[in-house]
Every structure is written in C-alpha cells, then in structure tokens.
Length: 317
Ligand code: ADP
Ligand code: MG
Image (cartoon, rainbow, N blue to C red; front, top):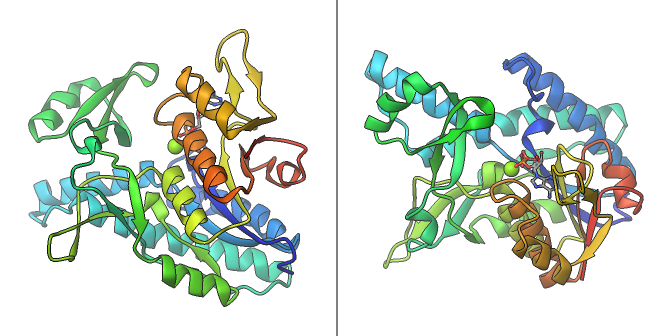
C-alpha cells in the first residue's frame, strides 16, 4: 500500500452521470459506483488518492430548484456559491458511500471523507466581466427570454438546440482548506475535495472571506490542489481517451505525450477548446511546470494503463 505515491484524480461529468442517459439519482449512484470500483483498483495498485469532481449539471439543477421554490413556494433564492457548497455535500455523500463500498470489497482501508472546500479568487478577475462557464441543463429557446429578464446570462448551444446559462469563472488562487486536506491525506484518508472546482470566495480589506456568485473550473482547481499537496501525479479523467491535435477534423490525431512547452504552443494554436479541453491542458501543464511531476489526461477506462504509460496523453516537464 501507498508504495506509488499520491495522485490527485479529477473526475469529469461522465464519471457520475451517464452521457445522454437517464437523469435520476439512482442512475447517478449506479454510474458513480462503477467509477468508484475503478478508483478503488488504483488504490489496490498502491496509489493514495485525492478525488475532485465537476458539478456542472448538478449545480444547474440545484439553481433551477431554488428558482422554482422561490417562484412557487416563496422560499429564499440560493446564491450560486451556496448551490456549489450544497452540491459538494450531496455529491461528496454519493462518492464517499460508493468509494468506501468499493474499497471494503477489496479489503482495503476505507476511511473516505469529503471536505467542503473554498477557493480564493481575485475580486478583480477579468472573468467577472465576461461570464463564460456554462451551468445547468440545455434551456429551450422559448424559455430563454424569460430567464434573461431574470438576469441570467445565456449563450446559444447550437449542437444541442437551445441555450445554456453562463456564469463567471475566475482563476483559482488559493485553496482555503489546503492544510486540512493535507492533514487528512497524511493520516491515510481518501479525501474528496474541491468539488465543482470549489466554492469561490474573495478576501475583503479586513481579511475576512466571503462567497461570490461564480464557479471555478474544476481542472484548474484540481491542479492547484495537486501543487499544494505536492502530489506525485495529476490524473484528469474525462470522456476521451486522449487529447487530440486537430480535434474533430479529418486530420485529428491523438497525442501520447507532450512537453509543457508543446502543450502551451498547441493551446495557443487553438487545438484545445476553451471551456472543455483547454482548461484541462492548461491545468495539467501548470501542475507539471511547478512540480516537475507528470500529468495525464485520459478516460476512466484508460486510467490504469495510462499510469503505466500505455494510454492517454501524458504531459512532461
Ligand atoms: P469533463 O466533464 O470531463 O470536464 P469536458 O466536456 O469539459 O468534460 O471536456 C472534454 C471534451 O473536450 C471532450 O469530450 C471533447 O469533446 C472536447 N475537446 C475539445 N478539444 C479537444 C481536443 N483537442 N482533444 C480531445 N478532446 C477535446
Ligand atoms: Mg469540463
């Protein structure tokens, strides 16, 4: 056990929700249980794990519930940052339960704990002036105008024939609970942290922090956490086996490995879409640059072979 070091594993949306599958709590649990089995196998291989996860669809649903309860039941509207905190709790519960079940089945130590995680961002981050991060489900065109009038910023999603709400996505600066997470990891716990990219907070002149209505990219938050923990690797798991050049064109080709400099050049050349693969490559490159340790982008299925160098995309110093 623990012979292979510490991995920060960032789970994409498809680790929890089946793409285009049924949207229900029980199907999310089934999907998460399958994900947890794979992660437990990494633990069985000797890796210590810190798990982070996205929350796009979940935080969107939570916001919508809050809106509906406000309109129909006169309940107070929940600020976005409170919705992020709530989804950290709910999704952390699901991951905690599934991970401890999977670890138990393999007779591995199963102390799993989720920590509500705040992330410091800059009040003057340019992200606040230009919201780019989609949250929530696809909104049909006929509802778009009403929601715009309620102050929602919407962008059209042509491929999915509707609109998405977009919110600010400021750059993460510091993980408020980093020391607590480190203590838990050092005690041998499997920690679920920085769910949904963390709860964005800003510091006032008096040093007090308070939440802001934004979401932090979960891949950038995961990289920051991996740096803080001096992790031995950062594993970003998504719905493609590898990062590609000329993605979605006839000349698409997967990248087995690239240096930080190459990654940043390809990013500059526009190979990695903003809001999806862009922040993943940026995040992993940053971790690799700061720590000199490898980062990987791959799928859940290819995670184990990718750690052996036989799959996925590896970013090297
Ligand atoms: P996650 O929920 O895992 O964060 P995202 O949808 O944000 O997933 O990011 C993964 C997606 O990035 C892939 O499904 C793919 O459509 C898209 N993508 C954009 N550019 C690339 C690229 N160059 N190579 C591979 N995938 C890419
Ligand atoms: Mg994403």
